[in-house]
Image 1 (cartoon, rainbow, N blue to C red):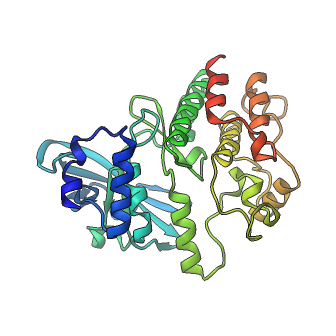
Image 2: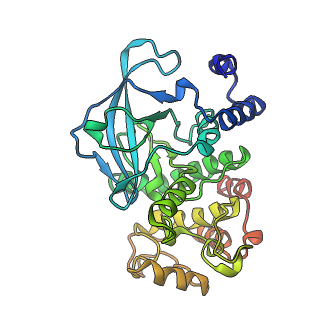
Image 3: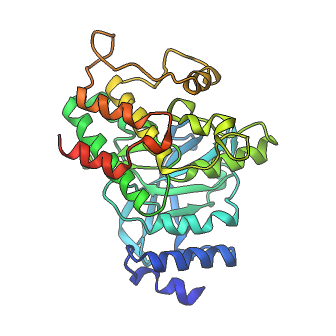
Length: 330
């Protein structure tokens, strides 16, 4: 393991063969490279989270060593420490079956994908129990917060195209996001969109099943495709639990709606169970327009694309490659 990981920093992140080898090795040895385990991050915020999400608490921290060689550096890097939780309880350290995923995430390189730096479990007296995911700190927060201060429609179009390109890249790497929505798209300090929390849905759902003894995982039904909901759509008859690129395409359509409407999909329906029932029956949000009471009109070309993204049949949806080509031509 040491011999392989010592080569890590000198390898081209685009070398998928090396990525697969290291991921497989981590799975088999049930260990992570030391470069992914941080013990030198000082929380720079109060014990209370800086940001709260539906399934996580985010603290701001400062990394005082180099990301590549862990030697002291005079240029401190602000990082986000994301502590996952199931309802009020922090998620425990990830089981070894996810170690390969962490290696693959760390090797991703794309301007519209948030870098995954690693994990930390130190400072538990400040942050409480639980494992924290380490990523670069983005001062603008998520895309919904950014658009409140920058409501120009051209900004929405730009950000959505950037998300599409980031999602296209993840799919080209054999990865599925599984939980794409406005809260999981951050805005870099230079204004570009970056997809965050890719792959975390499976970890959260698995943790919920263990914690709640079968009462169900974390659901964000407002962006979730019907094949993830309906028992008849899955081979085991228990609902879809296999995330697919086509599922991400569906969620991307709902993300487009979310940003143009300035609201969560199905905002008028309070209970998630009612949303699930409506989606299974074929209901989708109406086109955002000022006349309908929304803050802006969604362009006709985008509305046509969105409707293709959220058709019921996953095989009839466009790929993200096709989505990017379509949006780039506008």
